[in-house]
Length: 594
Image (cartoon, rainbow, N blue to C red; front, top):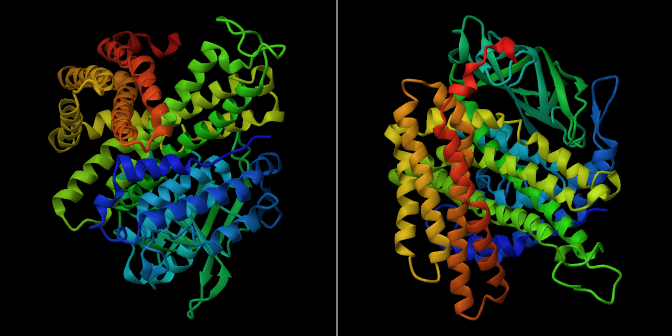
């Protein structure tokens, strides 16, 4: 059976030694995040992940959720008890404002904890994860009355939240949505329509579910300009604020899915359900993007999380599975064969996964810290710079880490040979669960188009130029002999990214298909450079720790970082070549020739 050990020490190394969390002590909540507090939180999150929800991962996959004739849904055995423990621990609200019952700690800690949880049990983690996204949307766009009414029970976890965008005919193109909102005399709205693929849409974990629903008010403009966002509770509240009658929103069915069986992915039918407008009329998409940005960072973390747990199990298997002899001579002569970890190709596979995981974790933490600055700093310029970073890196994190997370889960499965293909070892679940992360919260092709079509040119390229300058400055400042094996390849890869960006500027305006055809390669090119930049930071921190005599365990970082620079980062050249090929051959065939 699969096992998991949360990488708490890795996370502490990033927070303390690479990104120096103490430098953020001027921001609200960070002064309370002392080293002891941070270590304690990560330690307890690791314990909960490993001991409580990891053993339920297989249960959730095999048992799934059950819809009953009245539309209610039961989660897999043990989920309710685990969720009650999760609520008792206050995990949902660790970064929420104290005025609504949260602990007010940095959002970065929530991101770190969520990685551990998603590795242990991705399907379970989606229930509180979606709630955290809904909390963020209400915090930013809700009225004072809405915040007071809905946030406290959501922050504690006695209520959960969802995001309702997709309809049977309408996925990415939300301008096509048909769900209708009719205004009532008391200021509320009646919501009618069908939403599909709604994660955590109905369940038995909490006494109420707060649905955030995108709908079109009668008479609103066509397209995305006419969408509004509504708060629609599963159970309505009485005048005294207590739970009252059921709202007419029901689970029509649970989707039959490839993975994440422990999460109830529902078809939700709204039959004149009562809802309240959140934010302004016809600006629902802007409000929903708050939740989507949170969700995209979370989904990128899910890709990393599945890659990490798959890697851990593949390493354990590679160390114990005896098969063949090392080509350089027997390494275990007292045994009938050597463990497969002696073979270069096995090591190549495992090193590739680990190199991506460790840099991916750093990229997530770096961006989470930027999010804290964007939401908490009182310096307008700092907030703008951090917001630029979030806008630029969010599609990269979502698209690249989920693509690589799935690929890594497949590579980890490959370590088992035929044993990885059967269910006994559980590697198939990591592959199946990882697959959805490439699709939801905006399929990865859309992330690439967002990056190239919207983010590069935004504010005259301010965000991407800031990224280029930051990486270039780091390379210039760290050109000593110890860092040269890391910054020289990084500089070459950065050059490829800059060339690709310039090529788009010169060739995409007149022929937009050039941008569309090259966008996916550009996203991955950008991701490789960003991961390489993270490796340069980690290596520098590790070198300093080793030199001080306090980093013996970090010597492996220097080797893995060098492997990344030598064996992974050179792929930027291929991405650049494909981008520069343009769209001619891609677009030449008529549709009927396919």
